[in-house]
Length: 492
Image (tube, rainbow, N blue to C red; front, side, top):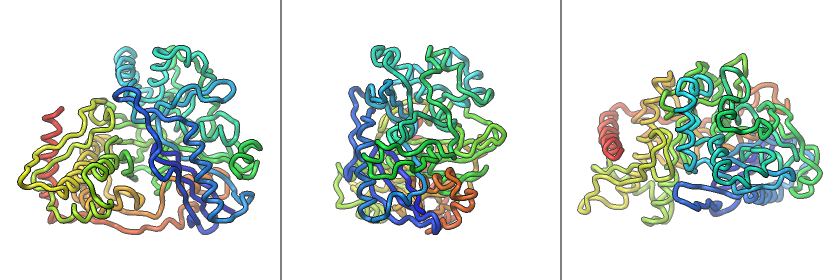
């Protein structure tokens, strides 16, 4: 039997088919081949049409089915990973009311800050583990205040993965993990966060039915089968936000384990069994995929918005034939980029900076010394240093990794990036043959009961490489980081 995983990103939709017996990925496909459109009607806004996620899912799936020639009736179950914190609104006919306000949109920052102050910091943090911030609940309040006609038409609100599950099955559902990422879950009461809903004047009736993360949640409908080529009745048995799912894909499920990813944005995600929070909500605590009322499994999440998007911007604007060429040029430059520092914060308000949006900047530029190779190295170092800046906060919450796991993809394809992360954190970097869509497929196998345990699901996970920190370079990395941090504090 086969397991199918979808990963609904903001750049593309990826589909992977996994052989359940061997655990091997047979094929993957993604669409569009260029990045999906993100619209910004105003500065600091970011929206996407949910319909384009669905259209690109169908294209990716069709390419996958054509390349593998498998019978869709042999697909055991489907798992869905999705970009976190997005707000999708549908009416009673399940039609989208307005474009989705996605993860990097910062319009609701002030709404969340006001809620934190008026409800009370201690009450918010003790119950929600986070400030309402710029998360899904605050985005919904923005719609209520600014687009009352749209708000009045809402039947249900969803996260992006809930929307895809609805398109596949017709059922509108969500999970505790999903609600927690929208700051809609009360961890003290183990139920919907009524204190925030009441404060915002939002009816509980807008929240979908809650289903477990791992379970047969619904099945592919006859209508979706005709539209996609899947077999009607195929189980949909797992869904999770992209970062909890990335951790799952790396078999990061237990306290002390850490996963990271560096795509458009970058994330460090550590698992804890202690109900802890950062008083300033610079890093956030959500329910992990295996969290239960009687078993705390909490994901402490550091997010840096400006990660791969910085590297992509340099690739387009500065000029290099490929990312491989950029990496080769960067490798010619010494640690510290000869005094050049880049702050990568150019993709919206940054939680780690207390929801400030200083923009990206370059410091220490010398026209007589620095080349585009220096820019390429300084960009990668700046991204890593922003990770380390946030990880210093995570340490105060008990997350002190000796090993950091990642898929060999995106920024982790760069030796400079990997070596810098190992060098500044002192942790060993382990790279694995997995990604979000493959993880979602394995999650589907756990949820449907095809696998009896996560251990069985991940017994064939292959480690591709380990990068150990080099003590001889530690002082250079630290000195470069301190200079970078000085530039950050100066601009802040």
